[in-house]
Image (cartoon, rainbow, N blue to C red; front, side):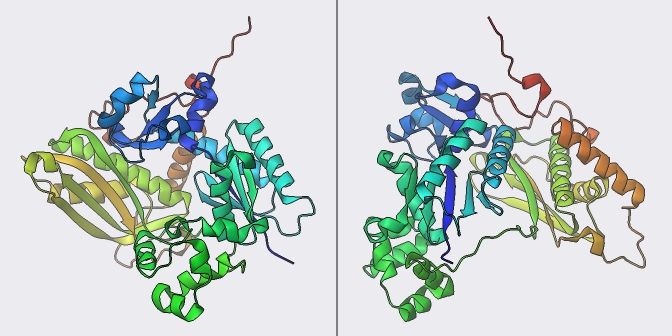
Length: 421
């Protein structure tokens, strides 16, 4: 049976999430900013037409955006994550297995589909829009790489109405596809290929296998085969647990107080421990780092240290104790810091923790039950419904998010109110 895949890609996802709950934004220029409202990380089509690029600093384009009646939003990751969950659950109703590739993309298997693929794709697109309000583009092809290329056409060519099957015109599409835009070809490989006269997907498809394997390894060879219609990259049905977990943020302003750094490190440790418990892992080692403000000290300097735990743990109070002990070692009075972070490494399954004869461990049944209860409450009622006193209340060091929209789907106080006249 011939394999077929569909890549469903949400259009301007962060912007689309904001438009779902503010319909008046439809057709107007909208941007979403990075942490601390520094750079542009998401753009509506109207913004793209102004020549504004991803990563451009806001101050450079703020006047232009305001002049054309645009709207500026801070990143609302809580809203975006929940809207992504709703989109993925909708897609799961169309296929027995899906691969969630990113927050706004997913692969669906279409092998054995009796219905016309484009017609089926339009039905998926209509359902996702109706159930979640998020517009999507769908690329269809015999391999995941070709489906990815098809999705680019579906998004850019209005004649496709959001759905494109590359099976009908593979050579024509690949001839117009820059090699740097091929899924799996990074910047360095793209530059190398262009130096050797390989500029399009069609060029790469027709290169001999021996040359590709020599210069791009087996991974590049798989990409070439995929461009030829030979499926080499299967769906990844279950994502593997992360080997390390990091939580770090840039501060909303420079921080030089130990008390504020202690609050930040406590908060980041709690978040990292929560992520570890979510994937049922325990950490064997904890790292803490501080990064100085280069605008104050005229250089980039980081301070970091780590501690090996005697027994792997995901118990927040225990991990916090180690993190704060590290902070005391690396903190230097008189310096200004712009960022801090906590990283957990040496992750092992919580049910396979190697005990220590000389250290009984602090994560007993009582501690496991307490962490489970806190996680359950925070999952149901929103992050930080229950938090640790050491995280602080005011948190003046927190990120700047002056243009943050409401958490429409995850906070009772922010649920939209409909008034009937």
